[in-house]
Amino acid sequence: MNKKLLTLSLAAILAAPCAFAVGSNTPNNTANTGTDDDPDDKQTVNITVPKVALLNIEDTGLTIDKIVLALTAPDDAGRGFAAVESATQAVKVSSNSAKGSSTTQKVTVKLGAALPATWQLDIIPAGIAADTTDSTAGGNAIATSAATVSCTLATCNSDQDLIIDIDNELINAGSIKYRFGPVDANGMAAYTSTAQDVTVTYTLSST
Image 1 (cartoon, one colour):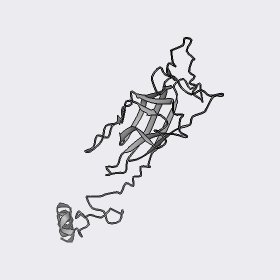
Image 2: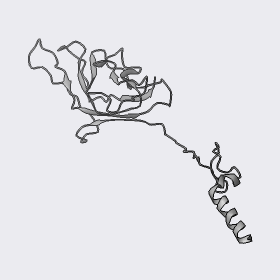
Image 3: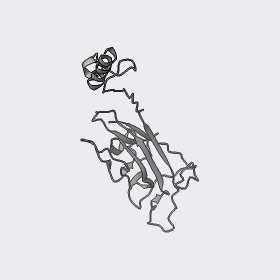
Image 4: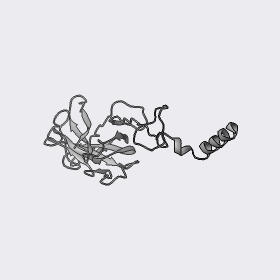
């Protein structure tokens, strides 16, 4: 008789386990620890994205470390100097913005010293476009601020915008060229007894 009652009691327990539960299977908002688990669990994923602000401008052939621009003297009286251009220089940018920020970056250009009054150095960008564009709301496409930045006696002594609206983007197919000549096209330019170095500084910074 006792064995029969025990068998019936075990059968009742197996058929209705919830009747004897202590509430440990009730979902809650805490992470499971392995000692008091429930049907839901969660983990925290700690994410870090570093700030990136990288700029590289280099000869596309990777063969020169100094750009040489030399005017050729005219052969005939009444003629002036023709402008000369450099080889193509590659422009590469990797840059990101702060999460949720509307601030963008830009590339500016500045000369280390003023040019003589009759000289003009042009910086001509080409093919500068974003290869990876921020697709979130408010993401900006990338654009050049001007077709050419012209540096003369009165300009480029302070930062001039060359590329603007850089958001979370990279550029690896852009380029620039330098063009040097007299301020007046096909005119005359003051001469130098020796070659003169002109330092051109590019800066990637927040707007």
